Image (cartoon, rainbow, N blue to C red; front, side, top):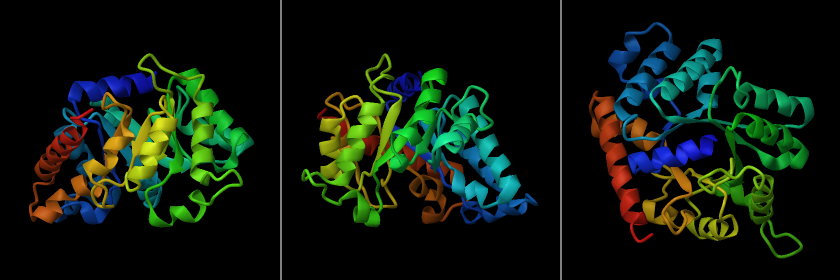
Length: 291
């Protein structure tokens, strides 16, 4: 199961973090961008160089589909090539596409990412569980067949997510707790050798108290934690989202790594990203050390 591979790769690198390739052409150094006619080609060259520089210390890559879809067919091909390059370098790959629907449409979304012959061969896919069980069933079925995994939105990192997610239900719970309960239920039949399910949850690191509560309620659910760095969450914020062994989650960071060269005023984008990745790794390690 891919969730087992991800956990073991995190242990090998000693680093529960994911490189977020939410890449815009404005992030690419001018000299590299000028060397390519198509923006998508420049973005791929940028992504590939980052992957080469970081794959020995970063166990996981999260590729945000929207940035590539915005560039049309060339961007979609860049998305596919980026996934394949990351996998060739030994990284687990999360396709961050937040798909969701029902019936044959959900089946088609799932087929694009989660089947063995998927055209976008990611290891994991982010999904929106708003349609309920019949919307999630095709994704769960493909995870069972292929060994791949999903991360369903539970408590997102953005401020206005509270407009819906924190609505209090008739039993006194916020809605995100009900969603989390369903995610854990959906994953009960897909527990891997390392004790975590192929059905994971997206839990924003910007809400540490809520994340800690969800960790207690979902002991076998692996968390994808967005919100670190540019969105304001610190390592101390997210530490409670891990279990007592310091496992059970991966922290996604995008702009703090891929734009590190802009902040530092250098064209050595790969070197700057590596320095930031090491700094982030050490910060997370220190926060998790009590566990």
